Image 1 (spheres, rainbow, N blue to C red):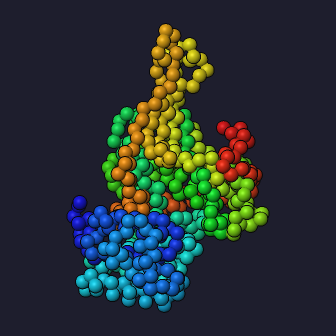
Image 2 (cartoon, helix red, strand yellow; image 1 turned 45 degrees about the vertical axis):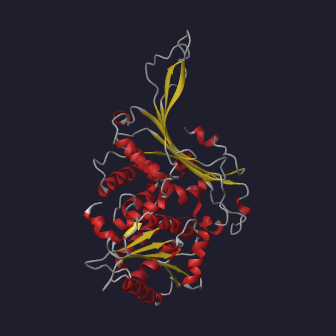
Image 3 (tube, rainbow, N blue to C red; image 1 turned 180 degrees about the vertical axis):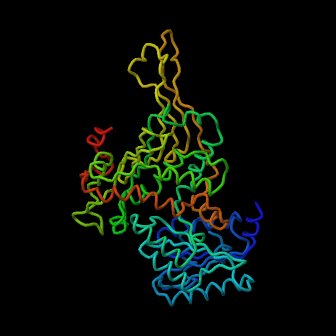
Length: 472
């Protein structure tokens, strides 16, 4: 542990969860905090303050946590407190500040300790929360303490709204305080992308348009929107997972080596790819290179309009206009109501020419394929070709696999998110420039999507992509 980490983990810290009674807090944040605390991966002196609109006592909040979070300890419950608060009420932030000071004084802090705010609330509240945190000085930093704010995606609704949020941050807070969460970058399997690519020389000399034919990045979810209909209706699949998760995966596949495990350098490499994405500025380009669909029972969900045109599935053919990747197709697709849960990245290499392929070689595909599987399997596999046993020279495909050993359980991505935010490690957090660059690519597609018919598909099946595939 470096000196900065040692200093951070020995400074009293208060973690404030805005939206403590919400779905994200119960599914991810509180279980992750409990696990981090159990393994002593939180600061030595730490307190957690749950903040929500629901009226309840700290005792009741602790009872909820004890009943809903598996394996929670009495020691962890002892560091919890609760505050009822309306985040839109500017005066309430003075009450919040007083509550945090009381907790810090219990930890022996004379002035202020470190403060980590997590905004597990609807993105529509972000602007007012930023303003109120700034005006109340609850998130003010001093010479001996930091205050950081974790912000969930989507950060903005389009290019204009993302720029507006950045402007508000610059007016009321400091950019260095903002940690934009894309929890996919915190997954152990995704971090292994960087390790695999830049710790091995095996593929790096073939990682370009001379050798790679195409890249396919997909995120299939078998589940539907469940009880999130009202939220999903305002977002859709492209904003929900395309603008953030899938584009970030694309950057990790296409970026140059950062040279070292350095947050600024890695961010710079990701940003370079995002800025090189070919922008589809016309209806014709959008119609040619994108596809959208909606599963058949989506409009039966509570909170969904009877004539909703919100996509639950999308596919985009993207191109990185750089000398390294010119001409390579990056297909990104994601959706709900799919036949299975399946998240993977396939890198298809070109066929060897000439190919000593034997009697079954002519007209046959003998390209190699590298696959990074995140779900349901967690593995890296390589398809290669060998001679089939026997008298004739016939090729067959085989696979070489590395399967993650998660018998002891991989840490949840939010454990990494929370720990890295406390340490001040920004490697897995997209910058303002990255977010805006992603919106620069996505916004023209959304603005021109009326030129793309909304196809219906039966939940549990794949949409029919014939028209889209004609343009390949």
